[in-house]
Image (cartoon, rainbow, N blue to C red; front, side, top):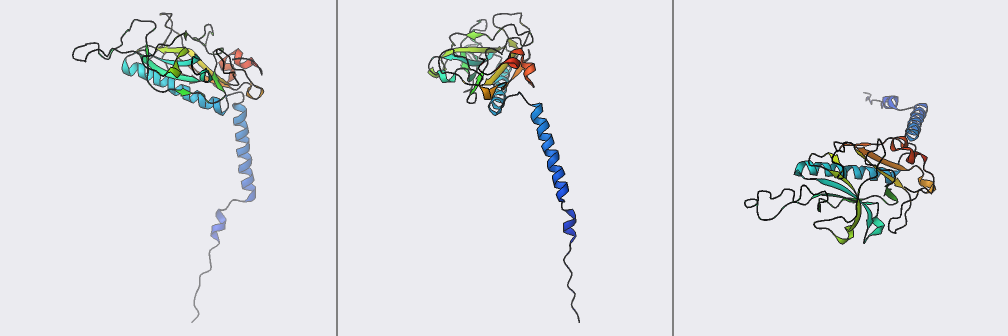
Length: 257
């Protein structure tokens, strides 16, 4: 009696891609990648993109802190650090105004509330360690504005930041973005301010000396990124150099920002 042995099935080969199909898929992927790179031309590189994302999270932290604790808060960007100039225009801190901790909640009805709610220049308590922008990435004091739509005023500066407790490495001058207790961005020098602000960073090189501005290098031309901070404290990322202003659009190698 002859035994029966089934022949192996060849149907598995029917699901494979042909060489032509693979080439078509590769071509489509290449076209999509090219279109994407064209669409993002002129926007920030890896360091700038990472720095923008980090800064956005810190602004969100400041706004949330203001609303959650019913205290004024701020984002501080180092302008000129007394003991650590290498972090100028790169160190970013989040802080909230000093609270009254005298006595106990039972003996002091204002315990845990703002210590000097009417002071235009309160002492600040750091709420976190903040962050440092990536290497060769710097805050642009030239292209960041109180009101980005009108581009009229630069960001406020506090000459000697008053901290409740802070390391000596943090002593110095800072650019300040301030939020009120509702998380609305405000101008401490103008009670009627109803605008927003902008935060822009760029890639370049900077000498580690006091008040030295970074310069655009040939490879970093138009390598900028940032976001607008609306009046309610929310942020929206800039999608092109044109949205950041004529200064960014027209900057050339060697230009300061």
